Length: 231
Image 1 (spheres, rainbow, N blue to C red):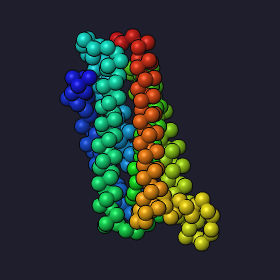
Image 2 (tube, rainbow, N blue to C red):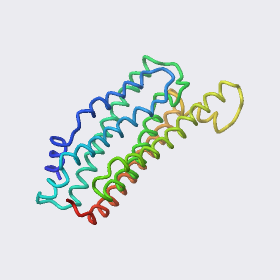
Image 3 (tube, rainbow, N blue to C red):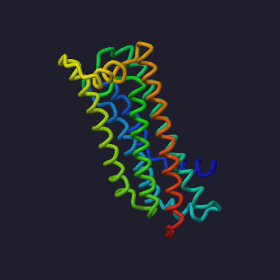
């Protein structure tokens, strides 16, 4: 597993990944839907799979003394590491933004643990759709990415749209309990004990969803790839 992971880092790491990881700087844009930055990381993962396919990585790996299951698990771990790096970068940017950008984000989710939780769910959705779809054939990266991108954008619009609505309703003076709760404890930079508690629970839920979906995606991908005749 370690050797396969090193192989992926040395031979399959597409240079655009550094550009897409730098999109975390979008978290410094005022009034912006920050989850969009995560989509670029999904795009980077697509380029990794596409580049590996074009450079003959599937055939090369098939000639190594490793099983198909090991190959898939190593690539899934590679994806997890890329996404983990992005989450850590987002956490750093959120900490910086809380100090330097104290104003409410009218364009989506505020900097906080809620944003990281939503990002984890976004990656979970992408993994659950993209990875099993790709490993059905071992080469259809574009079609698989399109399916994953649809799932990502549905979640992105739902999550950011709900946060925008909660802020707008709060500004209008209307008292809707559900949206008031979101505005006071979810779509905010946590400052009170209750806000921290709510967002920590959300973050924990996001981690759990990410772990379950990614493990499920890896298992399905292994089963799918076992049926593929690598050529």
